Structures are given as C-alpha cells and as structure tokens.
Length: 70
Length: 421
Image (cartoon, rainbow over all chains, first blue to last red):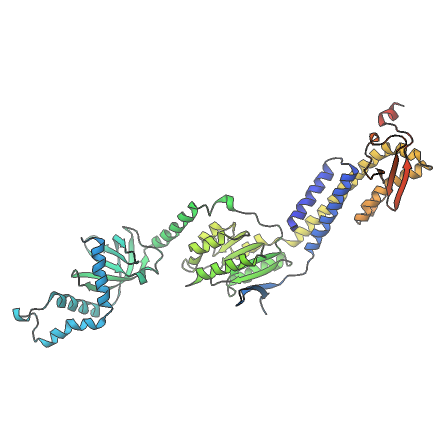
C-alpha cells in the first residue's frame, strides 16, 4: 500500500471512530488497523536520505541506476 | 504557367545538370574555339549555350543573398522540394528549395506569408528564367514557428492529448522522482537542491537527454522511454532551463509530446521560463513555471507530512478513548448481571473493563487505555454487546489483559427495568 493510501485509510478510521459508537469488536479492529497504518506511515517517513542517481541503459539493454557522482 | 509535373520534370533535369559541374564547360568551350561566337550568323550559338553561359556568369558573380518577399503559389513536390514565387508589388522571381534544405525547415510558408530567405541566384535553363535557389528561410516575425507549433497542436488536441480529463494527481509522497533533462544543465541542479531540502528521503534518478540542438527530440524520447521501461519512478519531471525559442523547440516535437503524454506516471513539465509554453507543457499532468517549481510540486515538505501523521496518531488515540469511554458506559450497564454472577462483583466488574483496555494497550503505547475494561464474549468467541445475546445459564468469557474469566449468566436486567425498579 502506498504512503498515501495508508494515510487515507488512517483518516477514514479516525473519522469512523470519531463519528459514531461502534461495537467493541468493530472499534477494536479499526483501532488495530489504525495503529498498523500509523506505524507503517511513520516508518516510511523516517527512511534514510536517498541518493541522486543516473538511469543508464547498459549495452545488454538492462537499465540500471547508478550514483551520479560515481 | 506550366503545370506542376512539367515544372518538376524540368527542375529534375536541371538538378542532374547541376550535379555534373563538368557540363558547364560546354558553355565555354565553343566560346573559346570561335573567335566571335554569336556575332555573325555563321557563329550563331545555341539557346543552351546562351542560357548556360548566362547561368555561369550569374552564379559566379553573385554571392547568396538575403531577399524579402511574399510567397505565392507554393507547391510541394512529393520528394520534398518546394517551388514557389517570391514577389512584391512590382516584381517577382521563381524560387526552388531542394528537399535537403526544405527538410530542415519547421514548416512550409503559407501563401501570402512574407519571408526572408537566403538564396543563390541562378538561371533555370529549361525555361530561360532567373531563379533563386533558396537555402534557408527565416520567417519574418514568428510566422513559421507559430505555424509549425499550431500544426502539431491541432493534431494532438484533436486526439485529446491535452484534455483536462487526462491530468492525473501527483502522489503525496513519491519514493522516486525521475528527472528527464541534461545532466549538464542548471535545471538538474535546481531540482536536486529543492528535493533535497524538502524531502531528503525521496530518491532522484536522472535520465540524461540532450535538450537542444540536432537530435534533442530523439534523445528526449529515448530518455522518457527509459524511465517508463524502468518503472520505478512515481513522478517524472521533464524540463530544462531557459533558452531561445530554437533551444526549446524539441519540446514541441510531436514524438516528444507523445512520449510525455504516454508516460505511465504523472509528468511535471518545466521547460524554459514562465512565458515559454511548449506542447510538452500542455501534455503534462502538471505544468510548472521553472524546474525549481516543478521540484516543489513533486516533493512534499517532509516536516509537514510528519506533523500530519503525528496529528492523525493523536486523533486516533482520542477517538479510541472516546469509543472506550462510551463502551465503558454501555458495559457498566450491561455488565451488571455478569458482575453479580461473580464471587466478588466489584472486582469482577473492574477486571471486565480492564480487559478491553488491555487489548488496546497491547497494540499501542497508549498505556492510559489499560484501565478498567474487559470484553465479554460468548463461549464461541462472539462479543456480547446486548443482554439479548445471552440467556440465564449461558457460559460467557470475559477477556482481560492477562487472561480469560469463564462465568455463567445468572440473571439479566435490561436498563429499562433497572431504571423502573
């Protein structure tokens, strides 16, 4: 699931939990799912700094990204 | 006025003659052999000699010249040659532009268009006419540019390539941005520094392309295809820094526009300055005024995303707490009878409520949730949410944070009965 989808799902869950009384089972399920989305989304935001690379086509036709200054 | 085919045939003959420079000697040789050619009936010269000699004299005497005039009667030969007349109020001259020269032009001039052309004066022996062999055309004003632009624009617009419905939204957080530009250009530097500043976790991959000059269009198409085939980019920025209209022209090339429109992920175009609008700008999902602006559109501000996610975490916790609070009230009512079934009713009831919170606690760092909740289930595991779900004598299970309590329903009271009592 993309970061965007995770955040959207999290927003949905918060809205559902805020808007009405749910059965305990349903509420718990949503909460569990919300926590998972939250954890995944946060993990994605704390990834390491990414490199700048160049996309080249090798002579055998395979595309590879190599670091720009290398 | 001969028809097209006759003219073409004659021109083709001349093209052959022109390709054999030795034939020029035919015009001179008789002149050297006869002392006074053409000065007596006996030494009369042929028409060919006259016209070819005239051609030699004119070609040798006049350097290529820039001429301005109005285009009349332009005909395009199927091989790509252009034939037309340049005229002004009181004069006109026949012109030919061979396919090798015409091919380098953006478009053929329109009827009545005033052009400035570089031409070499010659004689068309076949008709005994003065003729200008056009080498280059500069459109006066920007007529030819606009014509070429509009020709492609019209075609692609009819195909719906610029339609609003085709525009795709940009992803909130691209893991990878592909940049199609020259690795030597300033545009790349601008894009990299903006993305680095806003969202350092986003990967940047550059697909190098020549962005101006001969071969730029083919190079841009190849780079776009490379990115599409690679398939790991979430957004493509297609761009270059400012330049003359000629410099930016490759971005109006039909092949490049089609390649940009056909990308599997959203494309942000940032070509030249704000005032320059190329067809790639129109075909892109988003048009940015500059490469830096494109990078800002592509890369989110990481700190804002972090704030947003943190806020959602707080909202989730608050909403869950509110749900638990409301469930606590319901359970407090529904749990009365179960609590009474236990040996220590008050203790039971507390554990019941803590069980629910215990599950929440296990899922999150929200320790405050772990106070006073439990989930009551039937022995098949389905939650008991109403007193109608159980009957006296039924086995029930109260789930707590550290285990289960098995109990039996003694008696039920509805909230209404309790109130009425």
